[in-house]
Structure formats: structure tokens, C-alpha cells
Length: 179
Length: 173
Image 1 (cartoon, rainbow over the protein chains, first blue to last red):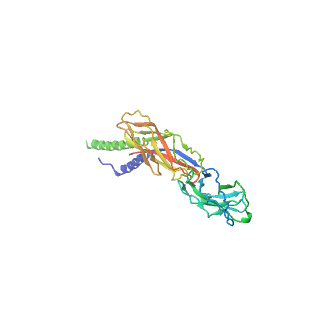
Image 2 (cartoon, rainbow over the protein chains, first blue to last red):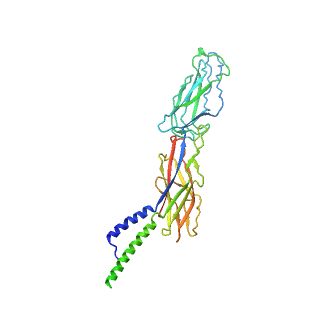
Image 3 (tube, rainbow over the protein chains, first blue to last red):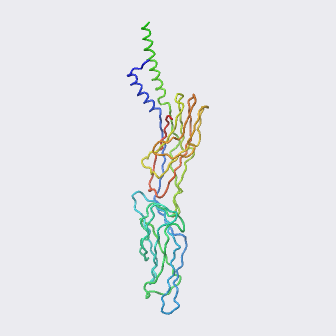
């Protein structure tokens, strides 16, 4: 029994169609919303004490306190595609006459990831906010001390004629994360 | 006598041809898959501590998606595959995985459903999730539960709403 060619021509589309239409599909969706996140804090919490020491020999200057490196900046930053990067600024209040309060952030270390910020050079703080870290993208530093950017804070006299004796002067350094 | 032979031969050819046609018509649209259950809107807890990232991995309900598959007697086996499509946008760092958490229900004693009980990463191209095999029977499984998992969630991914369509397909092995 031979099958003529025109019958084969009919059969082939049937074979193809049966192959195609025997498969069926269906779908469900999965969705997730990732919000913009901007969080920053200083770790560990609490104040630091930095005291000048009076000279014991006439004619010598006051002795500046040791630099403090106990504080770390932690942040979490999530930005939209094409969004502006973030920066962290610092300011001080009040300014103590005759005293420079200087700060510098180190490069980020620890358990973080993403586009972490770039530290600026050391800045002398005043009441105007100055950038200490910039270029923060979508990133996180890890939480707690030894994660993020270590801060080096130092105090030094600038103009002796402006110095005056004082005790327990609370100085607040304000850190702000912003675009 | 010769005329009868020719008529008989024509009838035989036609009968064969019809048989082919009927076979293919029967096969057509017989392997079917129905996708039930609900869409999955992943709930991500907010980050409350500076420096932290998302925990990264989230699971749907064990029966988030319910598949009903049937394979006709003549075909005897089939596989269910899955792939995803951006709907319209999905980030490739967000990893979707799927697994079968049960067999569903069937009346077929000689049918088996195998594979897919461990998470498999869903990609843009079809991956086989599980197989159904029947021996001389119509294999029909209803409410096969599928669980989804999302991983790779991070603040390093641009903030946005991402949607994907999980497409399940039943086909021949």
C-alpha cells in the first residue's frame, strides 16, 4: 500500500499541528517592590570625652587629646535606577573658640557590599555641613563597630588668643546622609 | 474480480488515511495544563537598622500555585516545564526558584509523578520541573502544589517594583 504524495502533504501539517497544540501553558506572576532606603547611624552609641591637658612647664602649649577612632559610620542606601548618589555631611555645634575639631572617614571595611562611599580628605568642622563621604550608591556597610567607615576625630588649638578655660563643654557633631 | 480488488485497495488506503487523521485529531489538545492558585506578591520586611541588608530569601506558601495536568492514554507521558518572563521588568539578580511540594490528587493507580521536589532556579528558558508517566491509562493530576522562593534581594538592586510572569508548559518528554 502506497500513500500518494498529496496525502503526505496533508498529513505533515496535521503532525505539526498535533505537536504544537498538544502543549498547553498557563502562568502566574511574582512581584516584589524594593523601596528607596536611606538609613545611617554612628556605632557604637554614646559620647566620647576628649580633654586637653594643661602643660606642666611654663612656656609650653596645652597638650591636645589623643585622636579618637572609636566611632564608625554605618549606612544602608537603596536608590532608584539613575537616581542621585548619596553623601554624608558633618557639622559641629557649638564651635569652641580657639579649637579645631577635625574629622576624617576611612574607606569602608567590614561585611558590607554594593557601591560604598568614598571618603573626603580631613575636614575642620564648623556649623556648616561639610561632605565627609560621597558617591554612595545602592549599598550597605554592615552593622556595628568594625563595619563601615571608621571616623578619626581630633582636637587641636588654632588661635591661642581665643582659648579660654572651660569644663565639660558638650559638642554635638551632626552627621547627615543626603543626596 | 480485479475491479473488486481495486475498490478494496482504495478503501484500505482511505481507511488508513482516516485513521491517521483521527489519531492526530485525538492527540490534538489532549495534553493539557491548567494553572491555578494565586499570584505571589512578595512581602519584604523593611530594613530598620542602618548598615543592614535584606535577609535575602523569601518563600511563598507551599501551595502558592496549583497545577492540573492531564495526559491522554495514547501519549503516556509528559513533562511540565517553567520559565519566567519580565512583566515588564525583572532584575536578573532576583533569583526565582520553584519546587513541587506534593503530588496533587489522581485516580490513576499506575501513574507516577516524579522530580521537582527540590528548588530549581527558574530561568528565561524552560527548565523541566517534573514528569508524569502513565501506563495504559489517562494520567490526570489535579492541584499539584508548587512553592516559589525568591532570593538575591538586596539594597544593591535599584529600588523599583519588579514583576515576572512564571510560564508553565506541559509537553512531550
